[in-house]
Length: 247
Ligand code: FPP
Image 1 (cartoon, helix red, strand yellow):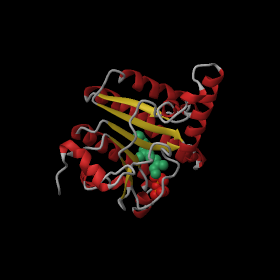
Image 2 (image 1 turned 180 degrees about the vertical axis):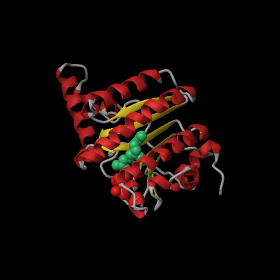
Image 3 (image 1 turned 135 degrees about the vertical axis):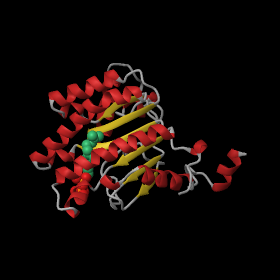
């Protein structure tokens, strides 16, 4: 397989981890077994990103819409999340990974929320990589919350109308402080964004693969990064302008 160029790494990779259910169905297993195997892929991808030198990894672990899935599945997913956090937090500290989370975190049950907060606190000083989990996340809601935040600050006189611009607005999003994703990966052959990071992906490179999430691994990740590195990112400029900047 082609090697990754170290100096052209994406700073922030975001992943829509899709296909756990289909993976399980193909093997005549329960959907929950698919999610369980999906957690192994999470572990492998987090480790690989850390070793490769990726600075931010955002994983779409649970959307606001996912609450409407059958109760047993929601309970199982929350259980897997809690177990993952409990099992991995020492490993995260050891590997210098800081945990963060975006989404309507108040929707989480008190015990899952407490486990999450504890892991975030425990990894607070780590600065090798940020593992950012999207939990009860929705992109449209994130934008609406940002609008409410700005209106509230405007009323309190903390911001002036003329200061609302492309540099201040992102500070009101859940992703405040994080760079926009350079690469967005979606597994399992679907070609949609599903309400993920709507504001932040304006210039993100998309990589869609047929591979189901439980089968996604280090090699698949390497393939995605090599593909990303072959692209020319123009941010609305011409090819000549971009090449001129590099000289
Ligand atoms: C999509 O597969 C996957 C999810 C909705 C959940 C992703 C969760 C995990 C991988 C495990 C828990 C996460 C962490 C961070 C420990 P799907 O069920 O929509 O698959 P389908 O489209 O084939 O039905």
